[in-house]
Image 1 (cartoon, rainbow, N blue to C red):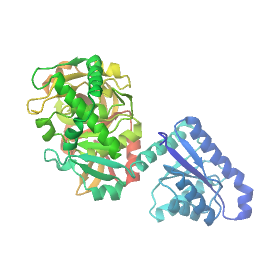
Image 2 (tube, rainbow, N blue to C red; image 1 turned 90 degrees about the horizontal axis):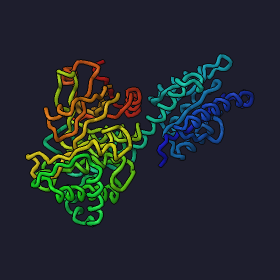
Image 3 (tube, rainbow, N blue to C red; image 1 turned 135 degrees about the horizontal axis):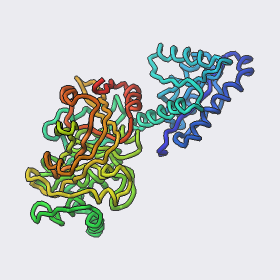
Length: 470
């Protein structure tokens, strides 16, 4: 599957054959300009319809053709006035979401066609988006690219398989979901697996694989604080075995993303799953570069879905974090997950050596009597977007928060739990708003300003959205 979004594009024309023959060159020129600009960006693949649409029959045929090519979304291009019923037929038979595109050209009424088509689609309750203006202008081209990224994120959820390993953790309502709701709204299949499979399959991991991983960690992790009791080299080897078992489960069951319960069956009686959580979400492990596989701690399924959306939006790793504290001295929210986080965020780069040099493995807290390590790091500074899917009486909404991650003195981590990974985040509003309004104990983040993309994704998915503090 291509990592780039794949958009279909079809040009729509006049329904009168004679008029169409006169104007088809104008229609085709606009299609060509949009396709060329998107390809030149290097960020989008484009599949063009085989012919222009100028009839009910051609509208259905070209829509079905693009749909069958597996596009992530469809651009309807208007260079001249096009009969709006053609757009309705394309939208009813093609692959959404749909972007209506028109150049602001006073010589030809493409904009009029776009508005008429938009009205037709709204009559039918078909959501769509619009891009008006010359695609050669950077801000206009960015609208197309944003649409493409969002369409890919939405469409690739459909048909995915989520591995729910273990059940509800620590009594959290906000972490559990209905598999019927997920299938109906997102097209995602929820497959439940018992955590005992991690223990069983861990015993089948070859010793040589365990030793290779152990040496890789020993050579690259900045500090490993064995304590001779709950966290020993052998216990680290056990955690490696659990991660390798998880990789096998993901591979053999074709899981696209996972949530693992951990507490307390695993953390109290076998080992913490922190190594698995860190490296599953990383773009590398001891086997080399890889695609991150979203892993949500404590089997938080809405966390996993939020992270999967962010992953497809950015093609990268996503932070899973606990809400922990507000530091009044530095005016930052302290996010501190109970034991693990993608090590990518130690620097925000794919340089595993540099990331791991800033990572420490500490003995698990005594409450986790199974032993093993927690994965400690401080998230590197940078502008970021925090997001979380929440539900109110079954209706989804996404809470979105722009934030700035900052670096604080390392001893600040000891004020909460030194052993755990930390994110220090400055919010653009009073922290009390967060504490009064946020509806989960977990949230998730990526670097960059992704607010507009997330708003568009929510509209595509029929999810309410809120930018907290506005």
